[in-house]
Amino acid sequence: MFESAPKEKAVVLPKADVVLQNGPIWCGREEGIAEALAIWQGRVLAVGRRDEIASLIGPGTRVIDLDGRLATPGLNDSHLHLVSLGLTMDWVDATPSAAPTLDALLSGIRARAAKTRPGEWILARGYDQTKLDVKRHPHRTELDEAAPDNPVMVVRTCGHVSICNSRALELAGIDESTIAPSGGLIEQSNGSLTGLLAENARGPVWAVIPSPTEDDLVAAIERGGRYLLSYGITSCMDAAVGQRGGFMEISAYHRAKREGRLPVRTWLTLLGDPDRTIVPQCYEAGLISGTGDDMLMIGAVKYFLDGSAGGRTAWMSKPYLGEDQTTGVKILADDELNELVMDAHAKGYQLACHAIGDAAIEQLITAYERALAAIPDPDRRHRIEHSGFSTPEQHQRMLKAGIYPCPQQVFIYDFGDAYVSVLGEERALSSYPFRTWLDLGLKPATGSDAPVCDPNPFPNFYTMVTRKTWKGTVMDARECVTIEEALQAYTEYGAFSQKLENTKGRLVEGQIADVAVFSRNLLTATPEDILDNTYCDLTIRGGAIVHDRLGVT
Image (cartoon, rainbow, N blue to C red; front, side, top):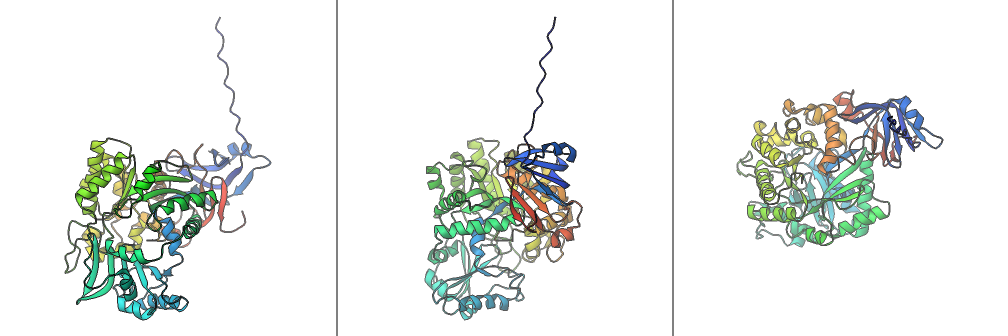
């Protein structure tokens, strides 16, 4: 006589800490829409129909009424500079919205000089010469007039070009006889300094600007992180840890976490550039890719290979428009880059290197291929940060080697017209080919590169679905994606770029309960409404409300 198999006991789920209901909950591109979401101990307990989740509501459950609003996984800005964002929030705002004209920019510097002691530095960031009324960079002598008693540095929006006044150049030891370092540019006109410094030539200026203290760094992390939460961004990558505070930035991040002052989940990319690297200290301390936890993790190593297209310093295979026939700035020699990449790869690091121009991308892919051939690792996921002007042939090599682009589509919105002005339509319109990458299976993430662009995700969404610039120029409509694909890039693919797709990025059982609630349904809204009339109403990180725009939840 056969004995019947024992019956499996039904799984009894605990009562939820938080339940979201009464609005569409976009759980992921493959998972689609749910009616309700249950959260327990910081993770997703269950998703499904409202009647299914109702049984998980207990006396202590906090029920959040979405009132028709869209909930999504928390956004992941896959490339920004959190420390720099927080620090520059205290600088003079030179962005086009605050200073659309040269006079307005100079007025901002004068106003800061009026309340700054003589000899103290005045720092500004965000101008774009292609958007200024004069269509040129500020000049050293204009900064001298605005702040005669202070050293001044104004950083272009891209972060790769700076304009300094005479006092700043003098303190840095730069004059007309100074020879530009390899990978740098010191501009002169008619035998006189204009004040423009690019790439490695800015090092002597940064060396004489007072370094931030650890207190400054922690405050910047907290300030910048809270700003991200206000947009529904719960995760980010800090793309150059060590750039402002050296190895002390590692200490600052851990202190911020200990003190409850780290607002967003942060994936740290270590600055590896020669003469500024913090990689040896991190490696000696055992800080390898993947070290850490869901809140703070060591990510990749970064090298800068070139500059920015709008600043004419991205390294291109063909010259920019104009009489100077420049092809941009090549920062590292081939042999040097190959050695650096091989060393970091051998030590177990993922790499996430800055390469915008097609020549820089070619140099980087070649270095990655060499390292992967010597020490195979099919899932190392080396990244090309920005990857703005990659070619079809390079895409095929990336696919074969397991190399992934990590672009910032908001560059099309903010800088697309500048690309056209310096490169011409044929080369500019097809830049940042998101649809192509997506269809090839390269899983492109997206982000802001803040403070290069504001971390506000809505211009990013807008340009992903329209390919329109701020002026309305359409930058190759064939590269448009759907809003669902844009959301996937901002969530799941952001997590994939950090090798964390099984931990976050979707609202599925067991993943981290990070949620963004928007004021309108992005899935049905017009692109224009997404751009101009949408807000993040609520941000939840690990099941806890960390931003409440309306203050009524």
